[in-house]
Image (cartoon, rainbow, N blue to C red; front, side):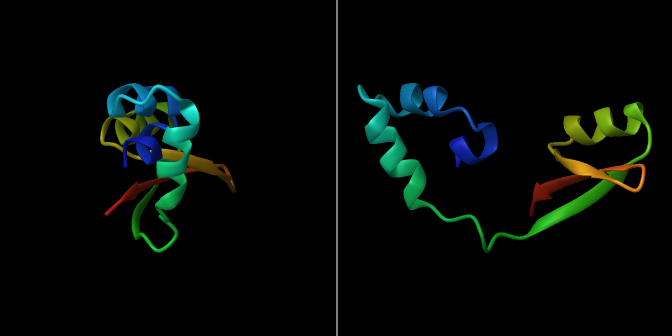
Length: 73
C-alpha cells in the first residue's frame, strides 16, 4: 500500500527492511489495485488543486481546462 501511495520503491525497501530492491519489487508487484474504487474531483484553479492534494487526492491529468484528481475510497 505504501508503494501505491508514494510510488517510491526505495522508501518501501527501507520500511520493509529489505537488503535488496529485487525483494521489494517482488512484493510490490504481487498486489493488484486495478479493481479499487476512487473518489474523483476537479480543479480549475491552483488554489483548488492545492486543497485537493492536501486532502489526499492525486493528480491524474488535464481535460478541457480542468485538472482531474482521484483518491482511493
